Length: 385
Image (cartoon, rainbow, N blue to C red; front, side):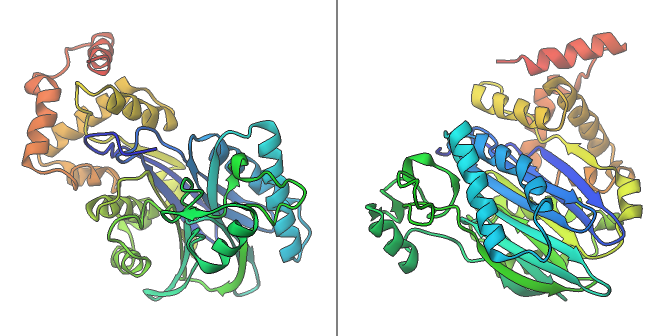
């Protein structure tokens, strides 16, 4: 899927999960792509937690499928978690998707966290080129390896399976050498480890302590001029985030990725080892920060804007109503009175962007009085061609 939108859709869909062990959040934006294909899991189980990001390609079916099923599969595995059991789980989940759907694929990187008496056992599994990073005191302790077709060991397997690597892609097509789904590259179903593309994860084990930070992100974060080390340095500058809301840190990372040149969907998740119960109670489990309105004449931008609103459980009209209220707060110098996440609404805007947004909202004439009339007015804006 190529870049098609003239301007990025910067609406931010946020989710938070926390307990007395972790304070975590995720922020996703559509960016320049014509549809959102990232998915994620944030699961707090009785004896293990699962956090992961899944970056779909071709469509969002596989990423949504894996994100929906993987936590239950991991929770069902006996402790201690063995590499063999985790590999088998990934391959069985891959096979289930291929049998039930087959169309589409996804990378996946996920961390399984087991609380101990003093520290945390962390098992990181990686399939593809999304990344998990472990950070301590502003230093990068660990980052997953990207599974790229041009890597010597990956190329050797691809060629053994009858494939070729052209333009750093499997058969000149797929830019990753490991993924869930992508049945076209998995003809040898008798041996799931000997395909052109495999769902076998790299598995690494770590010990984390209170105060450590895990970042999990799709490759859209790193696609531009934003290396893993740069991401860690930038994220560390945001610590502690405003009002202890790690969604603010994630939102700033995805915006910075756009500034650094990313043209992809962008998702960033942060898991901080600290008590997050108060932050969750303060900020809520979910938030939505609508981005600037789309170019009126571009149907693809309008569709992408609507889908991000739908992912947040709302409509285009309601998203535009929130954005209009944010614009009024910005023009009235009242942004500082809003929740920390909402204060980020205009960090990516310049004077021309503000004028364009004012013009979108009828040059500042604003909605009519009355709830029903206002609803109809914002609906009419959402219907603009």
